[in-house]
Length: 213
Ligand SMILES: Nc1nc2c(ncn2[C@@H]2O[C@H](COP(=O)(O)OP(=O)(O)OP(=O)(O)O)[C@@H](O)[C@H]2O)c(=O)[nH]1
Ligand SMILES: [Mg+2]
Image 1: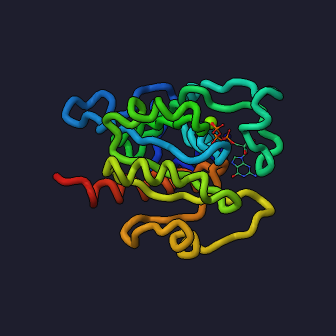
Image 2: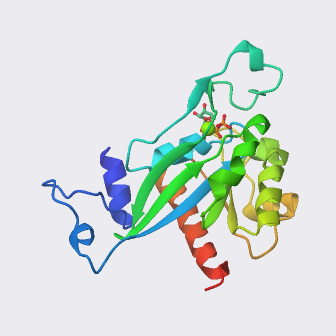
């Protein structure tokens, strides 16, 4: 927990209450209402979306995990994530406050194709999306990339690097996925708060640059 607090301090991430449980100044100052934005975390099955939302959220994240049973063995490939026992069936929801007054509401999508009908509702009002990718199964993120390309929502690509797998350069991933040059591509670890926050910051900066004023 200590490390999360120091991570937060170094990134301008403020807790909602100070050490003596008083609200932060921006919460009481009516001239400084925080800006709230919605961000979608998307990507293929088991790529680490729930892990990302959980590692950065300052509130207990809302999760809709369901236990996976033998019935889904044929459709849900667990080769890359053998320890995975649950899957998201609706969405993940978390919140993080950056720079005192920028509140990001994070919505993680379900990864499995049979739940994609929910995406249109999940992305409504979002400023952008983080598309997570795993280099062992790059093609799994194509549907998310196609979706955001076709609806014009700004996105960044964040490669969730799993231990023991080959490390690629962002430019190699860009080429493999044919990501246009203006879209940020980064390598990260969804389990590490700082690393996940960096991806969110990259998205916010990218969305600010590419959203018409
Ligand atoms: N080694 C390693 N394991 C990870 C990492 N990120 C996630 N995991 C593990 O990989 C599995 C998948 O993580 P989830 O966060 O459930 O993936 P998801 O994208 O939400 O999955 P669905 O909602 O089912 O599509 C879990 O067992 C995690 O513990 C990572 O960066 N490194
Ligand atoms: Mg999930």
